[in-house]
Image (cartoon, rainbow, N blue to C red; front, top):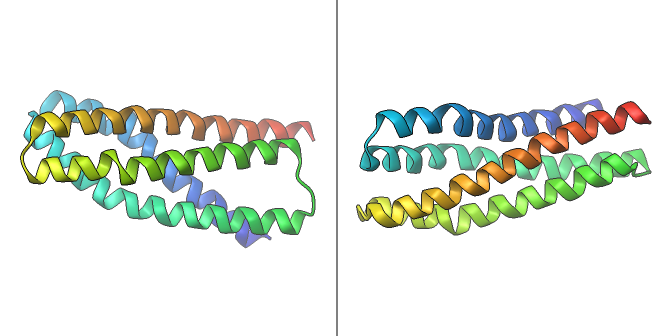
Length: 148
């Protein structure tokens, strides 16, 4: 059980920590120091490296989370909340990956900076939502565990 919990938490750290870094540190600096063509190219490359890690994290979180639920034999309310929030985050990420990220890559490849800016703006909003949900999920788990 400890190994599943460790893999679960490490995957959350990779995903939520990566979003925190990208949103709170990389984004403001890139916006201040890079012109749109360089900034958009940077983001397409960063997402190209980060998103495979997110897919691996999503798969690991699902597998370990479901395994832990089976091993627990019960589902406290905070675990149900974690499951619902986590699935919502996964669905948002899948949308980001298959829609605005795909548009961003295509637009950057075609040097269509106007459409690239629009795609990146959608990604930024959705990652902001996912980061908020991820931090909320962590808070729910720790508060919920403390109340049980």
